[in-house]
Every structure is written in structure tokens, then in C-alpha cells.
Amino acid sequence: MLFRELNQASCKTYLVACNATGQAVLIDPVKEHIERYIAMLAYHRLTLTLSIDTHTHADHRSGAATLRDLLDARVVMHKRAPSPRVDLHVDEGDKLAVGELELRVLYTPGHTPDAISLVVEDRVFTGDTLLIGGTGRTDFAGGDPAAQYESITRKLFVLPDETLIYPAHDYRGRTSSTIGKEKQSNPRLAGKTRDQYIGLMNHLGLPLPDKIQTVLQPNQCGLEENAIPFPTIEQLSQVRELSVAELACRLAEPNPPVLIDVREDQEVRSGEMGHIPGSRLIALRELPARRQELEGLKDRVIVTICRAGVRSAIAAAILRSFGFEQVFNLAGGMVEWDTSGVARDL
Image 1 (cartoon, rainbow, N blue to C red):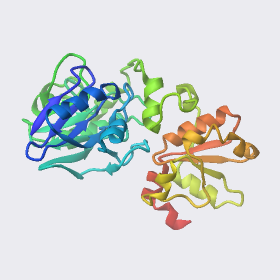
Image 2 (image 1 turned 90 degrees about the vertical axis):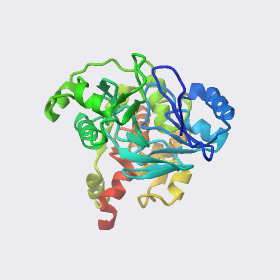
Image 3 (image 1 turned 90 degrees about the horizontal axis):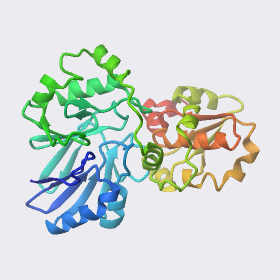
Image 4 (image 1 turned 180 degrees about the vertical axis):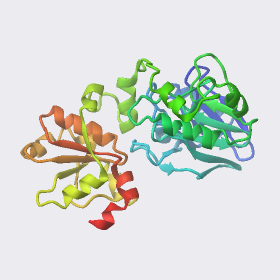
């Protein structure tokens, strides 16, 4: 196995390649370093087959989709990842072949709902779930300290103690640790009960990343930062949500809500998740330009829908800024709709 950390910075990108076949994967590529990655691949005569984001990043633009466009490498993320620019969605226990190497997927939510870790040979790439002497923050939308504690203690800490860990970030120049060391000395985890960990994470009071406003939503949507008028964090916090069960009840009423599916056309037509009957398809990137089509619906209840409930929250906030007052977001999106099985009861 050929292994390199490529950024030499607080944001980590890892190259893992099979020496026998020359096939390679990049884990958590950063968009501004694309040229560096391509040069490294060329130097070692490697073929990039996969680009994997361990979660939706809030502090840098992902380079995965750009690498797909340039090198035809498939983009891999968890099935709850909101971005439309994902070619392969994975979940707990899935295995990814890179030549003769095998990467095993662990679903490790908590930092984000779409967080995964990747086990290959003697090491695990932990994203922002488990850091060296720390853990990823859980105060972003969708963060869950209880889920993160379970992910770490029941998924990562059951790996052999000698397993090397490589996180997606480190701010003190450290490169790796081991599962055994983190179990013994990680100050957020060692000797902490589940409730103690939750209390600690709920009171960190960390400042938001400098680039969150220009990075997070574009990463979530697979769009450039100036593609649409992205809402502010405050506007997003005002978006009301409906659960799958609540939407099912409303659809059975005499005057059901208007459903606006903001996924890309190919997502809906792929057949992976289908769509809710009666939905209007207006891709998020087209929403501002097609505003006039919806002007006659300002007195109706509108529910926005996407894959995981993130892009549709952005769409709901945009519609509210346009003067639509009765707008709701479907929490969890089509992932939750399909998982719940509610469609069978309609």
C-alpha cells in the first residue's frame, strides 16, 4: 500500500493506493489543492478511481466533484450526504475496492449526520469524528453528541488498540495516533460517561469556522458559492420542518400542501429513491430564476423536499425571503421518507 498525507496543513487529505494495480483513492480532498493531487498521482503513475469525503465539510470546499470532472473518479459519501454530486452512496459495512486493497465503511455520525470512517489494513481514517486528543464539534445543524459518543465507543474503540488513526483535521502539527492511546488519554473521552460527554460537547462554545458561510452550503448543494442567493445562518434557523409522518397526514387532507422537489433532474430519474407523487421538480439552482412560476402559490402551504433535507431547507429559506410565508422543509428528505415506509400507507 502506498500512503501519503498531501496537504501538510490542518486540513488533511490522504492518498491511499494499491502498489500492485496502481489504483488510488483520495480521502477528503481540498479543492484549492487539486493541482497538487494530480501532480502526485502522475508522479507515482497512479489512476484515481475514487474520491471520498468522510462528511460534508464546513471549513473548506471539497475537491471530490472537481476530481470527478477532471479524472473521472467516482465521488463517494454516506447515503445521508446532501450533495447531488455523489456517484456512490455507502453505509455501515460496505466495502470499497481500490485494486487489491479494501476499505471498510463505518457509519460514525455525530459531527454530521453523514459522517463515515474508513478502515484499511492497520489504520482507520476517522474524518472529524475522532481527532488526536479530541473529537469533532457537534454544534452544527444535524450534530449530535450522543450519536458521536456511540460512534466512537461502539464503532472505533472496538478496533484493535494498535490501529492507527488518521483524522481529517489536526491543529497542532500531529500526524497520527492509535485507538489504544485515544481510549486511554483523549481528554474528552477517557473516563467519561455518555452523559458527561454530552454535557461537555454541549458547552464548548466554539466560534464558527471563518469560511462556513461561503463553504458549507455550496458543499451541501454541489454549487459554486455565487450560484444562488444562499441564506444566512439566521434565515436557516427560522425554517420550519415537518416530519415524514406529519407530511403523510397532511397529504391525506382535502387541501394537501404543494410539494417542491429541489433535487437535480437526474437524481429524481435515477430511480434510487423515486419521488413523492404530485411533486413539482424545480432544482435548487433554478429556484430563483423560476420564482415567477410560484407566485400564485403564496396562499398555499408549500413543503420543500430533497435527498437528505438539507438543500430543501436552503430552498425553504430562499422562498421565505421571497415572501412565501407558509413554507416547511421535509426533515430528513427522501432518505427518511423511504426508510420510514410511509409511502406504502398512502
